[in-house]
Image 1 (cartoon, rainbow, N blue to C red):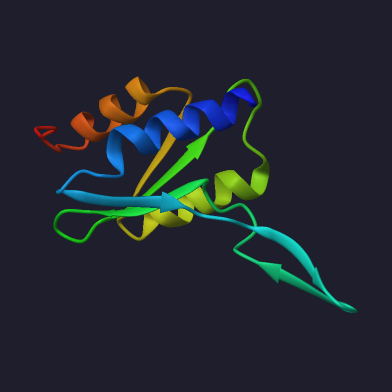
Image 2: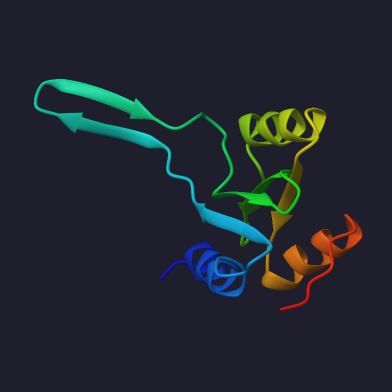
Length: 108
């Protein structure tokens, strides 16, 4: 398992079943259906997408060692410009800190 996949799984285990948010894997890429090539997702979108209590959009980009690509930075800036919360996470603790910094109580 890659380090990013491990971090992603830990974040999902920690947050996906909470009552005060919803979080899911956001897939993007290319698939072949016979002779057709189908692109899905949005270029640069975060690895995890969700919604916080109160309706605020949540996007989490996971990075183990690599840097964000320009299209990932642009996606994050767009989410923030429209009032969403965009988190660049290298660990579960990064997500906890960002949620607390944004004013979300993390009680179970």
